[in-house]
Image 1 (cartoon, rainbow over the protein chains, first blue to last red):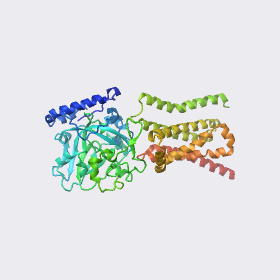
Image 2: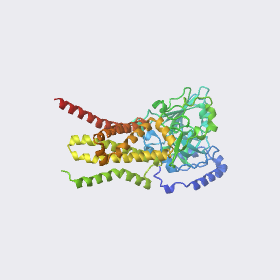
Image 3: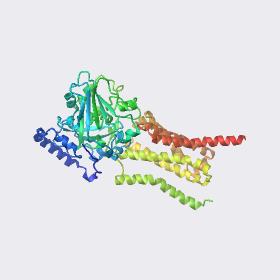
Image 4: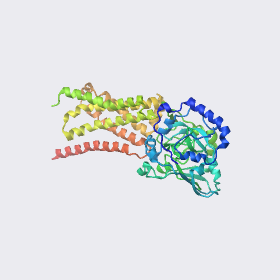
Length: 316
Length: 201
């Protein structure tokens, strides 16, 4: 699968919101009829080509009505330290990364066989949905991103975790030849993230393969990444090559790097400040002024139960 | 010797040169040269230049010692005022875009966040230096003027600490500023001990 970075998109080519909305409407209508027609393999073939439209995307009740950020914004302002520390580095060096062929190792406490699954194997059983989510970075900026993906729980259930699987550990590709950040060792690589199994089973958690109905660009974590919208962005690990069902809480990269600043849970929480800055407000990309940050990034209704009785100041 | 007119002209040149980063920032804002988070860009760039000019002001004296080119001292005030100019832009961005003039939240931020405290101290201490930079104040304050303007050391240290404390990950950039500052302050210590030693001989 080869996903090349698109050339710079002039602002004139960014889909205007109206058009985009009407396209979503179209997708909604069309998907009803065509939903069943998604043949296994079709998607894999599609992803093997250059970045392009993903067909048969269902809409989701979990999508926010808030205006999504533009494609240019979402693809040019990223934290992906494998490409460098600057926000513009991921876009700048996106072409360094080859995402074809791509496989994902699934292993650990599961009844299904542990193996390297091709991207197509991973994706083929799962119908894709559009999920328009708020994304809140731990650095106190935020965006609204129209992801295309499928519920992580569907994949988890498919591999039949045993009772010993208490957590899921994810790993990003380790390839210093292509990732200059890995050569510079700006963090301890490979990048690791994890979720508690109940978090992974929460319907909001998705594995994303696209944005704005197109396959992911490398700077956004192509070809497949996690999106957990109630947690700070660094939990939503990019370019996943390994999914492991484990008994112990995984040591996630940022937690290892600076333990007193970044925890395992990393739930968006305006009441628990970062030791060095306030998490009480955020700047939505595209706005000059800041806005209030919502607890669990506004997804409390769907996720707060999982943390009832937990001291969120301690388990930050 | 350096003619007065040449000196005046070159001061204008320096001012223009010193304002170039500001013009560039305005140009980038207008032409879409900033990132999709322009407030962050403005904050970072004005902060960078404030700190650079503070260090440049501190470099004037050691350069004079080493080069023996005494007229360089005439440019120090301009460099210092440029530092204050960028620090003011930096501070204003913070007041307006980060807090929208909310005095309470600014107070809370300054009190609670170490890096904000450091930056705030640095900026506040620059104010009396900028005000007393005129000939009139220099005359009025006499010897106390040089004493007062030693605050620039505190300003520079605060600025570097502000930068060191705000970066997310161990970053070589603030460490470069810290190293430059160490050299600039160290040169004064060396000078001091050398002159002390020569006095004793």
